[in-house]
Image 1 (cartoon, rainbow, N blue to C red):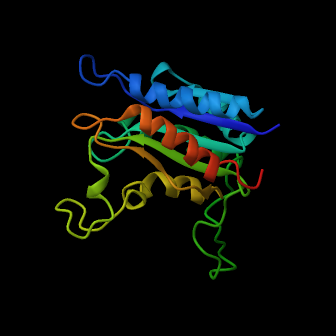
Image 2: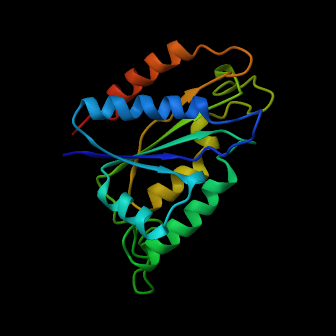
Length: 200
């Protein structure tokens, strides 16, 4: 049975950002994979977690999806804390990776090749105030042609460092000024079908 691990990293700001949209997309993923016979594993970072259990969830899961709002051009700060605690323990126990891949006797081996999670996959599903048109657009004032993958590199690098294959991210854009949530949910299902069900 395939195992899908959903991590919700929303951090509540009462009256402004309360997590309903991210929960909606997490629930959509949960239903999508449950209908296809996957075992669902969940973590809501804000509700608390045990690093030992989170390491084990990563070890068990075939697919990890991070559901996150984009706050000031990254995931909420509680996710960085989560990563530091969980991945440090995963390194210490040699559960997620065994060093950085290099050895003193083989300096030619590339940095970042010490991961033990080969064959597992990681994806980000994010909610954005930014419109889609601001990415991959050389005329964009803020990003000047850079894409979503560029912005998420600090997050995806953690997983690639551990051996995961990185899947294309999904985004729900322009959620404050021009939202179309029903369409975004349909787009999300198609994205999951296209990228997450391959090579099962």
